[in-house]
Structure formats: structure tokens, C-alpha cells
Length: 146
Image 1 (cartoon, one colour):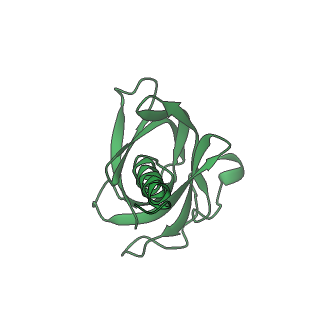
Image 2 (tube, helix red, strand yellow; image 1 turned 45 degrees about the vertical axis):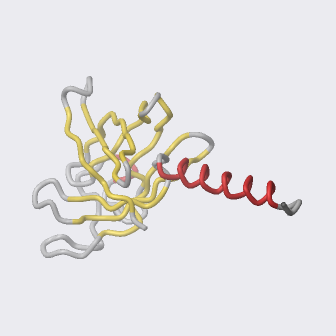
């Protein structure tokens, strides 16, 4: 057996472990869907910034009746009338067991901010926004982009 064979096996094992860890991480690019018509609405990139997750709209997907240059007209404060593309809509998310929670999510359609928790399930992300307790909210399913 060549001397490099054990090193080769170790490298393969490390690459597989990295791939599995990435599969269960919410970090990456996600396709969101409209609650009303179920059509793809935007692409959101979730990044890990010093151990805390934040999600930014990187693109609004073209579809009838929904401008790709939408502004957050219903938002208050610094977000008022700002472009939705480039806007951070998910922030403050920290690991909590199989979920990430403790953060908030903004709905640019109504300008409201909700408490939030997220969980990766295969190539989907369950995103639950709620007021008060998680029982009083709604869940969206986002799909990981390749």
C-alpha cells in the first residue's frame, strides 16, 4: 500500500464531512416564494457575520405585477422607500439546537418586522415569522439555489 494512501483517505473523509456540514447550514443563496400566488419572488443570500446570520435580498425575480426595482414603501425609519434589492431582511439569527432563532425578519410588503426562527431541511429552509410566540405566525419554505 503506498504511503500516501492513508492521507488520501483522510482528505476524502474531510471533504465529505464538509459537504454534509454545508448541507445543514442556512448560509447560502435561497429562492423565496410569494405567499399569495406561490411563485418564486426573490433570491436571498444568508451570510454568517461573526457567528450571527443575516439575510439580504440580492435579486427580485421578474413576474407580472411585481416590479424588480421595488422599494419598501411600507417600511419605517431608515428603510422607508429604500430599494428592496440589497436590503437586509433577516438579522440576529443564532444557533438554538436544530434551529436558528433570536433574530427578526422584515416583510417588505407590509413593512412589519417579526421574530423569526429558521431550520434547514434538506435543500429547503423553513422560515417562521411570528409575533410573541411561534404559535402565532406563518412559515415559508425557501429552496436552496445551486
